[in-house]
Image (cartoon, rainbow, N blue to C red; front, side, top):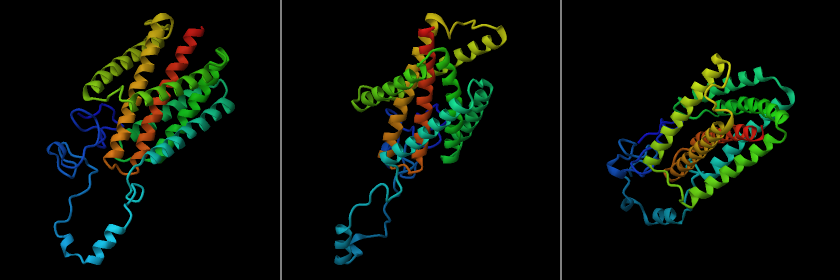
Length: 291
């Protein structure tokens, strides 16, 4: 099954019947070059003309004595690569947020402009065949500016709401990571289908609500206030946690399947998108609860 998320669906992160991820070469009838069911990043088959028997005893001894190549030496993605790139991306978001908070107070128009630029950069990256760090960091910077301005507006209306939302986002991330590592959550194809169906319905409902608010002059559907608003915020947070579980699975599969190191930027991009989603939903939930 291929993922509905365009960020990952073009790079082999979502292959397989039971789990969405890389597979070893030749698994389930696949070819070692990434054909149907195969891992596109699997190693090519051994050269049939490279017969170990043709080597001298000294050459064989040197081969066995040589240390094993690490993933970093072979250009493969490691967990350190993912952590480093994710840290860089989130730091860029934080710097942009500080800039938006300090330099652009209460300027909601510029915040919306920054959000639109971030959206365009994210879409361009989503449909590129390879990760482009400049696009990812550009998205992070503009998204950070938007979050900074928006957070200050929320903080002036509900003192301390941004701090609570940040702590809540960290808690959701830690909880999902523990649940995933303990295999309490298993990312199967059925799990993905159900989650994506709910996500599509959620986004459509929010778009309709936005249209009613823009042309009707009020929050006609009531998705941003009252009990229904709380339910939708909780649903949004749950969807953010769902996206995090997909991100964790893709990172695990990428490392196990030997994805190129540059794919760690893609993993950082996906994790950042999920964390920003959770933060915004938490910010909105806190505002409703304290209103």
